[in-house]
Length: 222
Image (cartoon, rainbow, N blue to C red; front, side):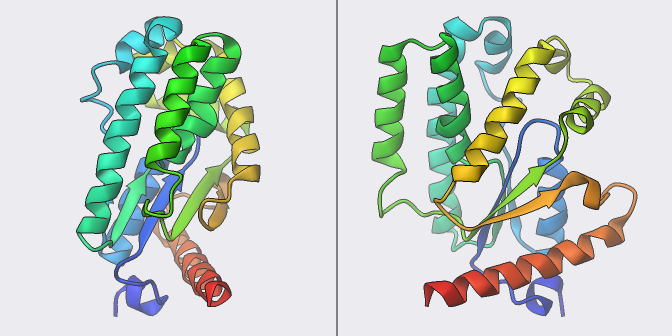
């Protein structure tokens, strides 16, 4: 019996991993997919034609970047459900509008016209009864210091060059966003409560929590 059967995870479930940069979304995605025998859906960072430009000039490229992400994530969401589910997804489509686009609009690095265009498109595509929302969103959270330490260890040049104030604001906005998020059920995990790199057994309590949480939320729906 695999972990999916052991903890009663539906074979067609779609579970999304969310959280700010550096919390370990990709590691959690791979680990859960292996445990549940699910496919993975990763954010296509390396193929993104705007990301490097964006980090060098937020105002010039923020709208282009958000439209690119929206299109790619929408296509990926559609693909997962056409496959019949059974996916662990790295990063959600909801973060784009609830955090990134909103932040750039409020900071003046996205014009009001661009922001209105983007949010109108997002609402028409995603905030409808026809959009397939995940069964569960797992939110990985931690202190700003812990997250900055992880970003430093990862060593991506474009992240190393980003001002500290940006990461601080991102951390605050993520916390504000998740506290009001209601598009699907949310399970919060603190990154200090497990170590998937050095202690593979630390995933076991998480698997149990996921199974219990999905079971409880399904009962509430019925």
